[in-house]
Image (cartoon, rainbow, N blue to C red; front, top):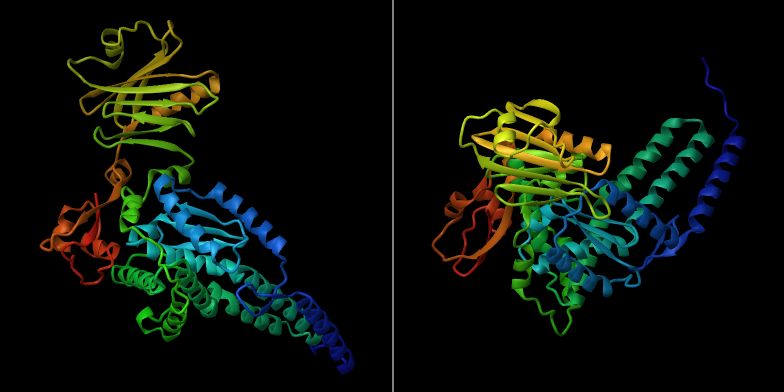
Length: 483
């Protein structure tokens, strides 16, 4: 079948009209880049701020936030110091720590900056934290997300113009591919621009711009570690194939930033960073597990049990007790107490003889996860009472709520109590960062033998302390441990 013929005059006319439309859109949207020069953008600053705010609100609903007041205060202090001397100091910047093990940070339009706690685990100084924040602020001040949006929109306009003018849809595909390649992962040009801007902000704020190279080296080392140990983990979005020590353009940008150094460097007390990161979680968290399952799970590491509590209920625990209460404005409690079984009693006998509660209403035998028990309602108080046997202990539980729905949820909690599995040890007894000063004799192999890190402890400690792949602690050096 013959393809329809297109008249040359019609083809030229359509092409000219669509080209004129594309040019009008672009020329009408030319805007100065806050960091210098001009860029074609199709999004106003007002729309940029609204987009950032909307996406930030969506993120808070779908992503777990890491709550640590002292660490948040440090991130906020460093971020605001850099933002204040950036090219867009008038923006209202927001800095958020994401509860994720991924070694990453990112920015949304309009001044929303995020850093994962997994990245904080491998940083060793406030200056390195400033380098990360400076890079992400650079993405905001250079309006990279807005320019990315413009590139995508422009490629669609050119694609449509080419299809209508020539009747050949493959040209549209070519235009889309070009647009995608132009902005994929921001691209090397934009990432290098963010590095340069970050180094500039470091210098102007009184930090050492060379911290940018330090951070990128840490990230490249992590990438190398993952590759050698077949660990699948996303790389930081700003990383490319070139190692920072060999990246001439990066070093040129930092050298230029060094000329902008303030006369008085910022007063950085190294102890501030150590204090802020002491206790920082390493590895997966119960909060991540709870978020993915929509559950509020409690783990007792010493007694080796776990149960799911009603959503948003607060926990207070000792070694042998757990008290869970409904959030403010609501009513309801659940209490668990463990005690050694002193004699051979069935669960109903334990309730009668030890707890001194007779004749439970709505009595029900429990058989769950290999545990035997019994539950019912105490007629005298209206509380639900339960007893479960686990590893030579009796777990007595009392629970009450103001409504049938709450009481049904509490019964579900009781029926969720089970032994902790070996794989859940990291949730039951999480790993945290502590600091010591090296004595000059202990090696990373020595420290690894004392660590609870489950995999590659020696290499991981080197990564976390900036000594990867073969460095050793030096006398007097502050070293991160994982306990």
